Length: 132
Image 1 (cartoon, rainbow, N blue to C red):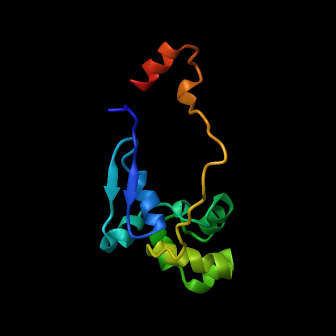
Image 2: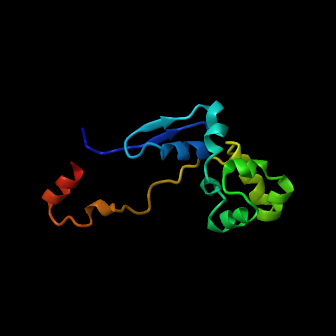
Image 3: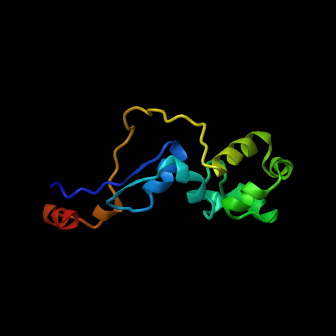
């Protein structure tokens, strides 16, 4: 009715909900049963895990780990050596689809922005064209 699109992921924790929410963008809702979380993750790159950014993904690649399945198979001592105790503990849990982080309300937005879709619009007619 409004022409707006919305995607959402429904899963039993924050990590999995975020990842499945990105599967069918821009206009679909996706759910992941809790029994499927570990299987869903296994072939994904380690970079999708919280705590594994550019730097940590390079460190993991240096020890032969690029996928979540490879991360699961890495001995814990090597993971701790690569990422440190705190990060490796979180990443090891996330690799199996277990996310101890809480979903927290961040309050009202501090800013409101416009998507790039409207950058070239100089008239209301042009905006209406983009929205259709």
